[in-house]
Image (tube, rainbow, N blue to C red; front, top):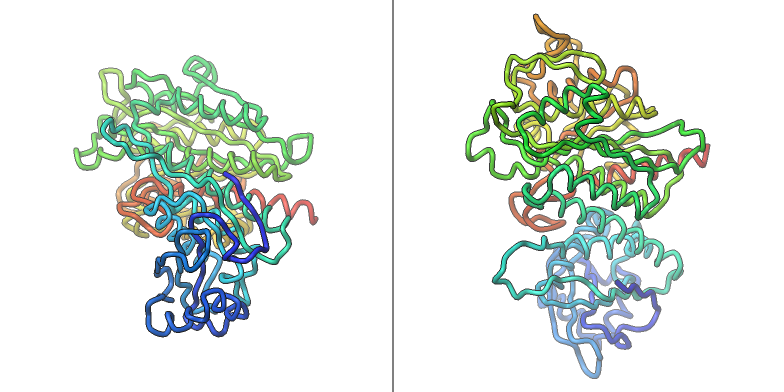
Length: 504
């Protein structure tokens, strides 16, 4: 994709479409006279008559005027300028991306000055513009043999602005990096499970390592057996597909590999529930049970592109959870990598088992801080709905820093309590140290709390994205299907930690 920063006038652009933001009270915009004069003073009248709509995300499409070289003008409503936020601006450009995709307009010129407010400068517009366009226009390349539709992608995006060219170009490129990584995560989640196996997921990790210079380690079944990863291996017992533990190390901070943040993702490529079998309706869509792994891969893609000064280790535990004569079953007792024993009460509570070995391995590999992310429980949807990521933590300061990144990206996270009473129920077993399913009440807390039993005193955050990882219908930032939830927040958190370290 070609990005251009220029201060030329709208009528001088030769791209397909020009995009202009229109607030509810455009006369208050300091750039409005220039914008209105560009359309021979008629734009003000069009707004007054409602021919050009100003409500937030309202789209008005008009043909070009006079001797202009572009074909169409897209006016996008900004609502009340004082209420427009960074997240709102991102959603505006996502809406534009969807419209341009429907118009099959692959080259676009954005009049940045029409989007600026007292709070949002040209650099904010630059960051949101390309990010929103690419997120909004995302589509999964399906496997239909009858479709003649060409995959849509932008070939040129031009930003018209009088602000500093280098700063704007840098902001646009960072926005594009974030969007591309989210879309990569979306594609992983949308991929059918017969195509995206644990082995194929490991190949994706190796591709990222080669591209960005990460140190990579791939553990197969034999290596897991030698190390004693009994939790992952138990989940894998019913499968004909080998499991993989995928480890990526990014040495962006100090050379002695200390102060390391561990990102741990659940990579269950398909979940039948095992012998605690899911009903037919609950099984469809379980290809997305590796949404946590996809988010970690996406975050590592951003980290690889932007190179923050922070040491990061990513650990992804990947297998499917199938039924066979060899599959693990309720009443089994397994021994995890940590040495702790686990009584299996529910084979459909498999995600927490693979995460137990994964966080243990991350700690053994030097992680001083841990964030695990998983499509772990239906309980988080019951508690918070499908638009909020649930969280647990054992460290207030670590969590508050993370929440600042969440607010910055607009990805809503809500913390639930993890009490000593909850921990006692996890430790209640007559035959083992832990049980993997104390009950349906407090399901999200027990799922994440089980993982917490393996982190010790290491500062830790658990993120349950069972609700947010996929959308049942088209939404403000993309189509139905995988969302790439928490990809941007994880990477933004690492970037913020790197900035804080450099300032210390």
